[in-house]
Figure 1 (cartoon, helix red, strand yellow):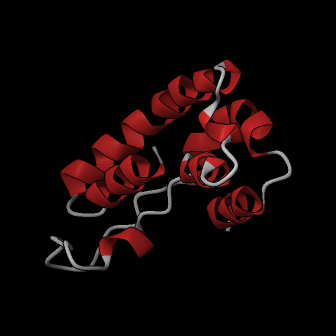
Figure 2 (cartoon, rainbow, N blue to C red):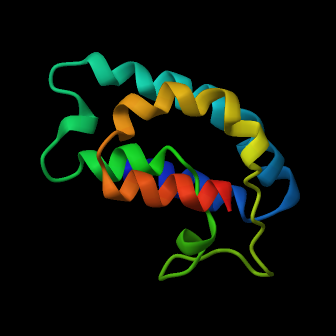
Length: 111
């Protein structure tokens, strides 16, 4: 799940059209993904990758635009605006509680 979310965030960094699409969809994507918190097993309670999955719900596109499969020709777009996510962060907090990666992700959004 975290790889999918990182890939979607990075795709938004490719051009203005994709940045706007990522910005528009991310709040509803986050609300939907948080629905898996009550699943048994929950992806957010996985011993190895749960913290990664919860943290990936806070988009951080720029680190994921680098690498072997980078398709961004120009400067990547940092499409994330914290104000777009303020209303959904409360839904995310139960999945993120007590997870270092999630705290880092939240700090990154708020910076």
